[in-house]
Image 1 (spheres, helix red, strand yellow):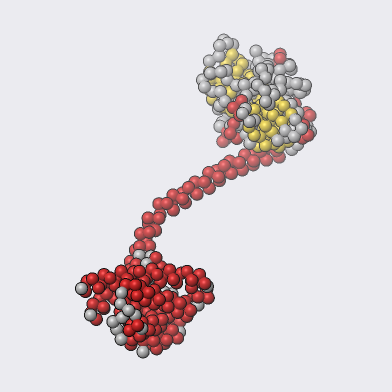
Image 2: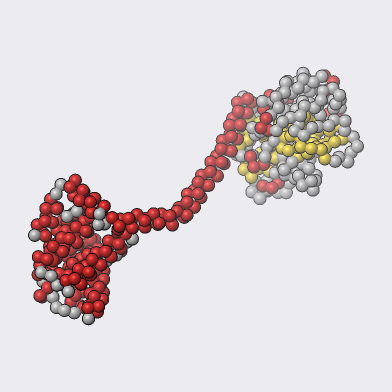
Length: 343
Length: 154
């Protein structure tokens, strides 16, 4: 009889059997299934910390990766914008650290002589000046960044009021090596406000005029009674030197151009007597326009006139060997018009 | 004796569902429903053993997917009937009981898999490995139950 009844159960329609199962589970087996649910919930709760930790780690990895991607994207967009403004006369390159020389401020570029790159060509990013090419091979080259001890460039404030030389701080000076530059040789009577934008002056035939170098942070003592020195926070962070542009290939006259507008900047109109000559202009003519931080770059108007920079020198800076020790520090922007440098 | 059997059966059924369903052990817990049926069949008439198998099969079917409902009842009722039938030829003693429980569980698995298509789905693995292993596990558990109950009785 039990066997026959079992056969009847087997032959019942699926819906009826499902209803029977549901009924049994809701009645005599209800405590068992309640126990099962409790056990599953407890197991889920116990498993939660590990699962949550794993999810958190995965999320952190995604966020970190996304952060670097966003930074890279921002950097590339900025570079792309600069490239569009430049139009021509540059080569895009990827910069990597020179093995075992990363802290020296030298880095490798994946472009070389075959791409038209020559020693002395400026290297920039969308933020500003990085340095210059110092050693060129067929398909690669070595560039010297502003972190290098041999780096120096003639500089001026964006409004053309004050001139000087930007170089790496002397050893031990305020612990600024590798993180800041010093704008030296500014006449004593010219005081710069923190936040003033410093750009290349276009003197010396290496760097075209108007490439952002950094922002004045504050004054530091200068041994000379006739000059002032300022700490300059570089516009290009060393960690952001990944994608760069080498200026010059296919555009021989680039070094004589004023690139201030290419960075979306322009200078305040200044009177003729304040324009760079052998002596910096008087501070009484036009007050120094303090520049803002990189997040809000200054919008200045074009200059009335400017001094035509000299042509590019044949060998402006001694080329350091990649594998050998760095060459002795050359005079910045040497060999050309020393009389135009600030006293 | 019947009341004791009923108590032991209820205890084994409760243990079975608690271990397999409540605690989520699944096949890691021995099949105590078959053990309860086979042990009870040694003291019951074939008809009563078939009814007991039917009842245990209903419980077992309620823990399985709905499309398998009824198959456990069918197989267990047949198994109960057969187990009660072969009682006279099964000798007393732990070893014989172990073999009896092993074969009973093996027959249950083979019949159940055959009826539900599991034998085709799982193939020889189920027949040669899973079913004997499960049968051995259940028979050892049944032997322990039998030894415990007999000691309590004596």
